[in-house]
Image (cartoon, rainbow, N blue to C red; front, side, top):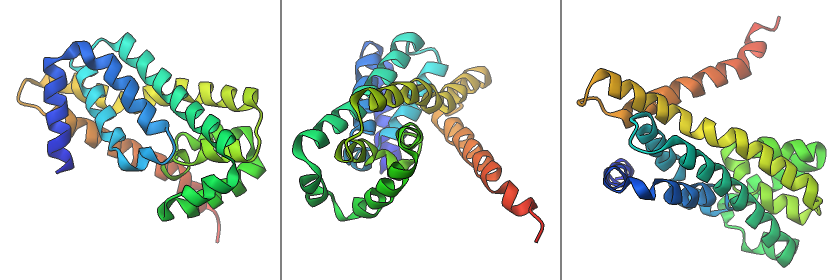
Length: 207
């Protein structure tokens, strides 16, 4: 069902390319806004948008800038919200599925601070709660926003790149090739490579 929905979104965007940048902004905002990112298949949609970039259907500059801006404002809105309503209400309103990542993020945040915000954007469970934790623990505005902006500048191209490469390869291979499928394969390869880099030292370590 998700694949059909994503394919329908991609087909609609092909026919309405002028909406590419605004929709990318909204999707990136929802992907970065706390809790909502769990409910919306934003990653799959950004993968599809990347495929349209690689196929030269969407303009790369405006779409990339929209993705960066959406990511920054999504995290910033979560941070401001948590500061406004306070820690007790945040913990009370958290869905049960987010309470464990939230508690874990608090521990990580107290130890790593700025780096927890920066790295948290790239980790699914943490991304959904990191802005909330930053606001609840009283992280300063400048420190949070510097980590927020710098991480978004890297996160946006990383999110769009697998789809863009898939779309480019599909364009080279002909119209019968599915760019979204190629993007999914490339994304899987990237995840496997990152996993290997993460666990290689443990495997190679002497027993």
